[in-house]
Image (cartoon, rainbow, N blue to C red; front, top):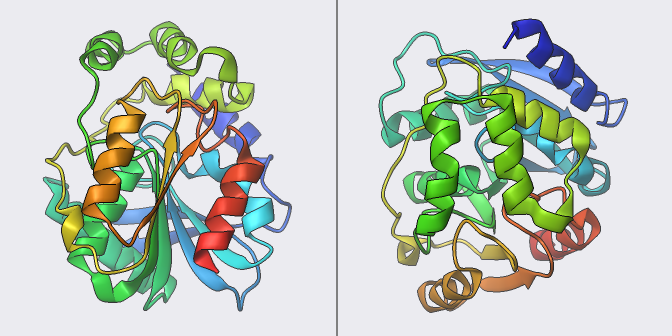
Length: 275
């Protein structure tokens, strides 16, 4: 993959964001972090963490609506493809990711924020909410992986070729299998496929966090047709672990088609929860 191909796809998806979106490169001990910022300057802050290979730009279908009320900060994850650098303190484990988010919130001037993540980003959001509960007002999890249940074995087998020998073709085939009839945005699919081939990516794996220890209000939105895990099982476990939480299934959504699938429904649920 040539760097220019990824850059071109990145800029094409960036153009889908509202015109007044700001690009901020926030200095942290782990390197500069790219954040896409949109919404009223006096709006309550909302930090959005994407899934792996998705980049912070994946939230373009949500930013315009959510950004009418909230100050949206969509982040390119440390260790993943995007415009976030990995320099300075080495990224070794989940503790480094939470320390990175400490530095990022400090750099953004956010003492407290609402926090929302999808997939791997949801796992990271939970880890951070447990690490620094005093900084998270409300926590929203969109089809979280490795939080309430593990991956389906069939999903891991399908994903394996893209991990061992990444290529655009393998990534596109994997997306087509998981998203089925959902048909996520084509520009984003192109960026995702290119992102999987970026050299030097380092996504941190980790065990399931202790969700029973979460002390802030939590929203869990699960993809009804997710092939990553069994959504009904995840929903049942989420309700047991979070008796005061709000758990719902998003009809017809698959894991990788979120947050692009049915953005109006997702936006409405998210904004109703944030209040």
